[in-house]
Image (cartoon, rainbow, N blue to C red; front, side):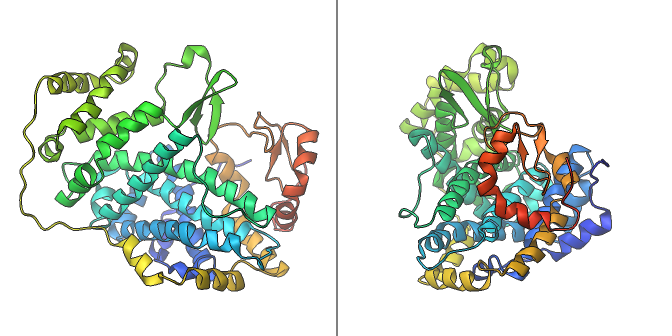
Length: 443
């Protein structure tokens, strides 16, 4: 099988140029789906290019065509859709979709955008090109980190809305909740990359992070509760590369990538001169920050030596009372995207849901087949396998899998028994994908 290759420069530029903002009402429609395909192809291209160290062209395209604000706007639009329209869809008694995949694509759109932003925000010029929308992205990340803290307190992401009337939509909501967790982890990485650039961020962005949202204290809660780690049946499990893994005893003290993102963000927010001049080290904040000393063990310092500076800072903070920041009279910008979408669509959520049921989420069999062919072209097997961080795992039990569905070649199983068990759920998608050119095959 040939290795998947990134897009050509001409293809990448065409996709970047094609990026447009969409209206919340149009989610799931034909034009919206074209935008989703652009985002998803660019996301896969960004990952492949970054893994080969050739992402600079994509960075330059996104900056020169001013597309980062567009992506941030789309990210928040689909977030609002998920919170306001999706619950209404699930409660519609006369909505009985033959396939929930069109709705899943809208939910997945948020994951595609945040994954693309995570890949490119490592670069300073991307952060700077966000301009005023960086405030909206900071607010977005704050909302996602708050969800992570809530998850660590309750053991799961809180479910929204009343019980669902249909099993298919109930399953879809469970998938949305699982996806929300992974999206929140991506937002943590994006926030850390933003904090890397505190020296070039506008004053309003620093104020938003340090004073409006008090991100240092929120990050400390993540250090304390670590929502990507849990104990199950006496075994320690950690979430990494999109799945939960049992951690062997000899690796339990190793820092994960997510742990590192939290500590690096704290380093940036607490030790940079710009932040120290802006942050209010009052009694509450000081008491919260000093909790970190218990976590700065020799084992942790060996893995991330930069934390020695944090240790010195906290030792000094324990015996001093830093002066409060100066209160300058400054006109500061505020984020506008979230509020603009809410005001524009206030009182229209049910009407939007019914419009989308009629025009986007009730496709005919022929329309589903046509869209399946489009999805098959976007999500080619070669590309998906190149992006996969690990060997395939069974769709049912999660263990390493060697058998693939011979009709659609899209799902993996460890045994025939697991494949049979999953068939009723998989059948509709399998029928669609098996009829799309280039997807069917034999094992």
